[in-house]
Every structure is written in structure tokens, then in C-alpha cells.
Image 1 (spheres, rainbow, N blue to C red):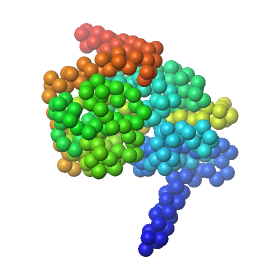
Image 2: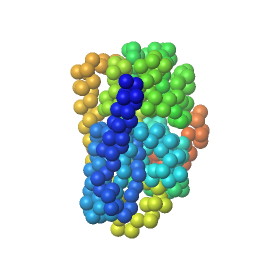
Image 3: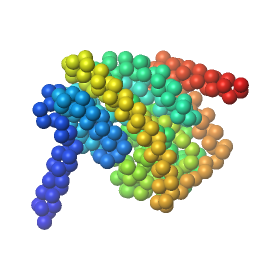
Length: 344
């Protein structure tokens, strides 16, 4: 019986790999193997498949993509290592995972930095050229930005005060110096784990508090254990779709432009899809027994105040002073113009 079970699991794995492979690969002149930790069936992989289909159609099948979703190729760091040896040619990366390669890409992940998606959009647009150049130096081509959205503190027990948070076993993304430094500033020693390890750690009690978007908590099934959500955005999470720069540069110029323009179309829509899914997920979570916890107002202000202290403590360890100052300038300029318009 054990042998049968093993054979069934292996067969299912092979079927999954085949299903994730683009049908346009047969006869493709240029093939890109890309991976992501996003689960198959999520809005992220659905939109990526739409992108792949359009590129294949417009190039008469000359460009094909083989997609490995759901963490089959490991976490972000494992995916990047596979790119370095040619086993992969690209992937969808989180800001945390690829931040170990391009630290400045982390800069928008500072807790409590943004107050709205309008601010996010303005700063993201202003940082595009900066990010593109930073990735290029590492042999990576920035194809598109992706988004997880505003993330919240989620826990197995209700948390409304800083003291309660300090007594909880709190997760931090492995390799994320910003989250680790921020939690340390709050008097918390976090437990670093890769994203694929979080659900198991919640199930075993190794961690009790995690951070995710509302939609992300559903697709990764974290909400089955974290039935309490502090109703205040903790920060903003995002990612990027990257390709190996050398392989990308070998494409004819018209194909390079096509990939970029098609990616912009689909990934811009993906961001809107993600925001819609996050809005709708709030009610879905409530319908499934999750409770929203209102944080103590005084402690909420403390959490925001600790942001600047964290940045000072980190110095240039997590991201450069240049990227931070550029981000703040873009944000302050937008807020100034917005305030001026509202006062007129």
C-alpha cells in the first residue's frame, strides 16, 4: 500500500508539472523556464498564463514559457540560484526573496510607510528606472512589477496591544532585514522562515503571528490557523517578474518590446485584480470565522513611530540611503500636491 501511495503521489506530481507547462512550447524558438511560489489557480498565475498565451500568439509560437508554480522550484532564493546555473530563466519574486540580490528593491516594504494605493502607485512609477538599473547590474531584466497588497498582522489568538504582540511567537520572512529589525525595535525576537514553511509552522505552534494580505491568507491557507486579524495595515508587499538579462537580450528587438508591452498590459491588470481580490477577501474571511481585531489606538501610534527608529537603526544595511531618500521624496511630493489640491 505504501508503494502504491508513493506511485500515486509521484504520478500526481508529473501531471501537475505537465499541466503547468505552456502548450506553446512545442516548436518554440525561444523558451523561458520561469518559476513562482504563487499557487496554481491564484490570480497571479492566471494572469501570467494570459500573458504567456498572448506572447505565444503574437510571435506565432516562437516564444514559449514553461511555468513552475506553487513553489515546485523552491523559494525565491532557490529560484535565483537555479537561474544562475541556467536551470531557470526567470520567475516571479517577492520583495523579500529577491531583496537579498538587489537590496534596494526592499525600500517600499518599510512598515507603515504608505497610507493608500495612490501613494503606492506614484512611488512605484517614480522608482521604475532606479529598480531597472539595479536589477540590470545583477544580470536581471525587470519585466513587470507585481503586488501582494497591504499586509496585516494575523494570529492564532486576538492581539490588540503591543504587549500581546510581544508575547506572541512572531514570524518574519527569512532574509528580510527590514521586518526583523522592525520587530526587534518593538522588543520582539522573530522566528525567520521561508514562506512555504509558514503554514506547517502555524499548524505545529512554532509560530502564532504572521503577516500577509487578506487574499494571500486565503490562497496560502494561512487563515485556517490565523483566525484573528488586526484591522490595521502593517505594511505593503510587492514583487517583480524578472528574466535572465543575457537570455532576454538574445531575443530580436521587436520580441523584447513585445514582451515588455504585453507584460505591462497584463501585470497592470493583475495589480487591479489583486486589489479587488483583497477587498473581496475581507468578507470571505469573515464568512469563514475569522475575526477582525481593533488595535489599541495608543499602541497603533507607537507602531507607526517605531518605523523611523527602525530605519535609523538599520543604516544602509537593508537598502541604500539613495533609494530611501528617493522614495521619501516621491512620497512627500505626492502628499504635498494632494494636500494642495484638497485645500483649493
